[in-house]
Length: 326
Image (cartoon, rainbow, N blue to C red; front, side, top):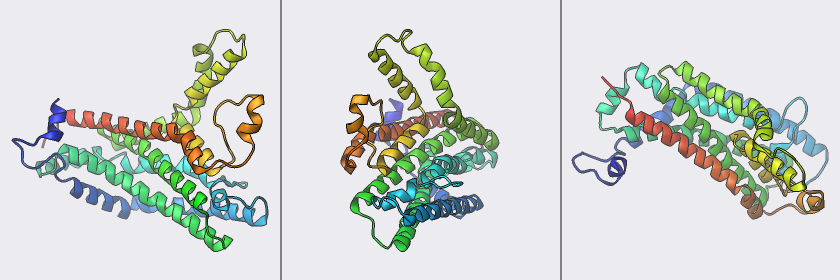
């Protein structure tokens, strides 16, 4: 009730809970875009993106299918380099964590947080400004990659992208930003919980590594425990497979990977279990239109946004309860 009153009423207080939001947002945005940390990340992203697109273009020019050429720039891999999607699945969490792991605890350590909040800047505006600046920086970075890929494709391929390709690539860009938002919100949460930036960074990286490398193993161990004890019918087998798939989708990495598959490979028509009698219709045939693909991944996109909101809300509650002294 008190939290609701803060957003609906400002009686007895000057200004609103959002006083100072623009100042915090612009200051943090400028720090992110001009800092040495971002310069290092930009060079890393540029090198990996150019390498992946170069190998993809070589494969496309040498022959093969001429459908969805611009989508193939994201998905084509050639040894020893993975596809651009593979690089993004690895780099996106690291970039998001690198931008947010010291967002709050660095202010504590520099003893500047009490000075900031002594100004007409409320805690709500301070935390929202930090998170929105991080999210906007990630959007700028990934939008630049998106434009770079399409620009190189236009120069080398000599044909413009179709509306279907552009729409699918744009939706993939939005999904990438939401995926990065999860790890940014997680790093922001740990920057509130831990006063040491090194501890916050290690905790964020540990969670990312767990869901990237070890969650599939944990899910495989949980399936026999939570699933049917005896497999007697086809229904039991399907229930076991659906349980394993549901457990795997707890990981944001799995959700992002399935979104990339559906958006960037239109011929894929199913993400779940497929029976042999359903094989022809599920995996073969003409590519799905963009609207049908969005219907398939809508729960995935909703899950990414929901997890981002939950992590930020948890950090918000913890930050509001912290004692800040001069």
